[in-house]
Image 1 (cartoon, rainbow, N blue to C red):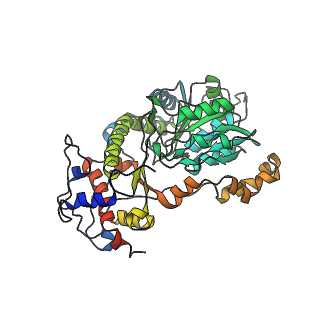
Image 2: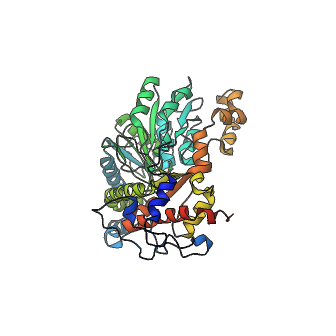
Image 3: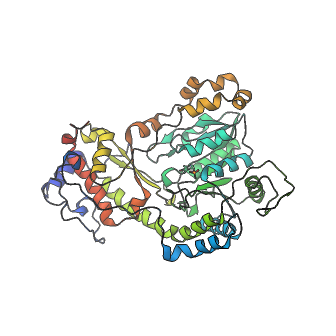
Length: 464
Ligand SMILES: *Cc1c(COP(=O)(O)O)cnc(C)c1O
């Protein structure tokens, strides 16, 4: 556990210098003389919590998501719509080329969503029934469902609570003769520890499929995530940092693998076969995962803003982190030393109720929300949900694995991840990426609000 820069007593003493009723100067928490800090003149720590009937810290809207600017974004989309060429063609190819360029990969293939990007990548790396695939439990179901869709068994590796990422030190203990692949997830848009993961994967000959569905343009040593493993998978679902509504992409430098992914996403027809060709001479088993031209036109419009937005999220996240890490019981994410940029799909911190007089995380979240700061407790534990037992009872799993491996109760015991349990059930708090597209004053509102709740924690304890 990192030591807090100030004890609770010191923190209160520092704040009391200004008096509780005085507006708290933001730079009391973090001296940033070069930054002009817009400050709500009406903010007062003495104001009762909004949850108890006080005036909320803020009532203004947060930046909305997705962003759509008709002046710049609609020209190509309208051209596509009016052309009648809606099925996969040149605009999709152009989007793929630009996405590959944006992340520094040789190739990119657009598919219907991030889940199917992972399904395709796993299938073309020959991950199938009887195999085990290492995954972190601190992720979205879209990481794990593709493992099961390919008939393989997910094996959960606990996370490092400081970074929220899969803990490299816990990987090797989970490797068995069945282990064929690992899916590092750059969860929340913060890069996983790829150098260490790659070294372990190399040693044990595991395929590495990066789930970068939340990590558009994040970097380790100036190399974009998604380009470290055998394949990188992205999502362009509505909430993601590049939003198309639904879509995804696979990136890789391996031509043979990408040719196979293309075929698989187009009924198993030969690589490069255009849409609408019938009697194509199907060469391999396939499915259908093509995106439309109008989705690609939306993606191209969003892509123009992605780098600027990502940089803004990084600036605001660093600013917010520096402010709130001074509040006792608030432990923001840590980035690995080699991270040169994160994506911040989410801004996470760990909430420790002991520093808030025992105030539960649920009440803390309610109190934040009431003050006009939307927030979430994030993921539930993925390593003990019924979907696993459902898979284990399927005909394919019953044929491919010995009975002992399919006993749900012992599976849950083998896959117990205590660090993840604590994040999911007790500590994690998230802010969403759109909030990080706001101003410094917006970040001040978040920090001030957490401080307000800290100050009034005892009164909030009466809430259920
Ligand atoms: C969103 C997401 C997925 C799945 O992407 P979809 O486009 O929603 O299918 C997979 N993994 C992670 C970590 C995600 O956040």
